[in-house]
Length: 316
Figure 1 (tube, rainbow, N blue to C red):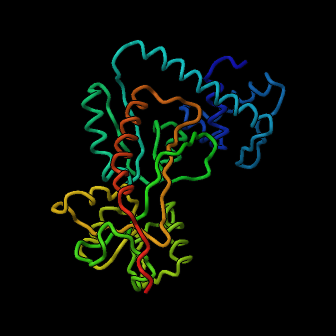
Figure 2: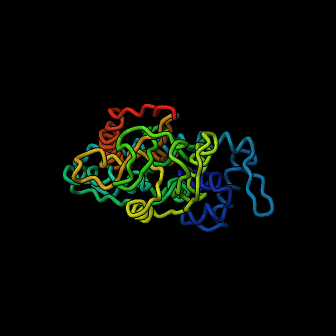
Figure 3: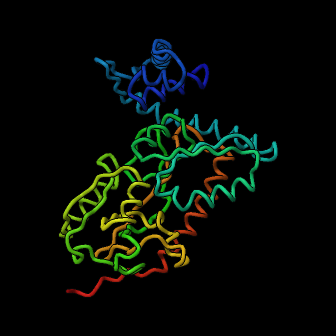
């Protein structure tokens, strides 16, 4: 067995990063130190764990096998430590969470308010970004967890379903479209549509939907700035497609409404969100507690769309 969990952590970092240099930066080590520890493991087990090439580190079958077991062992260590710390009493420490604008607009504030009331000794740090930024931060252990659009998974991550929410068309308050009523985009005429940039996971989904449903588009505006997108839509004839959970507050009191929100219909479109966390680590008690509150508030907000039917408009 390895002399310490340190060797396993360095091996896991090298496996996930596919680079000794990146692994060293992630684990606050030196590149030569990582290489030496990997050599020690290989000598101890009598098997090569990586193939070293010109700037590339490729796991061998033995490396794949050790990785699966190392991740489970490191996670078990974290869970054991968490179980013991639970006997110490109230929660304390820091929770580091990654959320997209999809989650921060409506779900974050009530979640934070509830959690900070219950856990005054826990600091919550939220990083708002898109999945391309959040995913590597979670894998590196810089974030306890993040909520991102569903994807196929990646080494170093544990992934589980979090929420499914409908995609909705968002237009200005006086657009004349049915608020909370279903719309068929191809019947609306050429759209001036604001879309996220190509690095955003939802971009390809939206373009596929437009193409497969013969939706006429006059012009696309590419914005990876959510506040800018909403300001543009609120004051012009431009429209955008956003996740329903993000616009849940618009289903409330009419006097507070700022936009017209119309679920996509014929066919509908949904966004599946997943929770990602480092595979090698268990959530701390504080992170698990905040996640529980976030899940409750998100489910509560999303239920507004369960009550809103989005029937296909009559054929024209």
